Image (cartoon, rainbow, N blue to C red; front, top):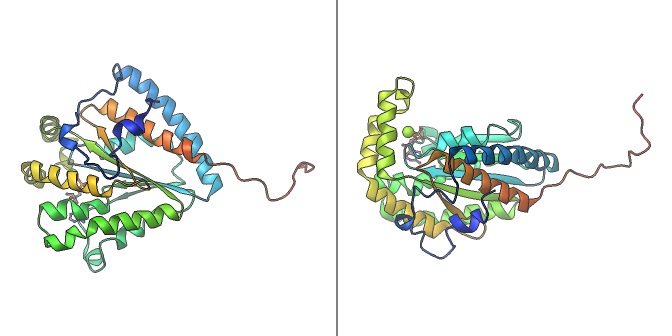
Length: 271
Ligand code: AMP
Ligand code: MG
């Protein structure tokens, strides 16, 4: 466990996120890859146990929102941090450019539909935040439309929280230099090339506009019931240890319990 991980990475509700002042290459006091891997292995085991209890309890759920620019490591985080959890009881939703059907509804329709059920862990690979990030930067809707979405999102998340979903929102924070390396690596490696789209370069050219949009989104939607955490993500091993620590700390606090059997079974013997 990285001590005090939530306080260290939290965007304090009501305060500026200050993304530009945070270091994407922060090691969070970890020595190196090896130490971090041992920590992640231990945390994954604990995560598995906690998930089992969450699933058995079947009263509450956990929603993990992963956001970040291209190559920030959303897919990698899911692969590394969640590979130990039972697939039954875990649901990943990836949010792409909305389909025609999705566009025929309000932008939260597709989101609410895939929120985790009681007992489940839901992982959002991108999320409703795209509707106030890419949509703002690429001017897909007028300013007046995206501006009110901060409030919508706070309110949707409050409903979810009050109905039993614990929400953890993670912004994977990388530097432009690290993104250059990772995009180039995608181009150079035939097995990674499929992940590259020319549009990634357009987004990269809009780095400042995206940072402004993230700064606003995190500042306006980090709440007591759905806090944002800024995870330094230039080093994958720091990122994995940080996200695993955040989740374990959150679930420990939730402290899900195996349900009590409905009747007294002490005298029952199975022949
Ligand atoms: P990827 O995560 O690399 O598979 O890419 C998914 C793409 O879908 C990204 O470029 C997102 O910005 C885009 N996307 C996701 N949600 C929306 C949305 N609501 N409106 C427009 N583009 C979106
Ligand atoms: Mg992509």
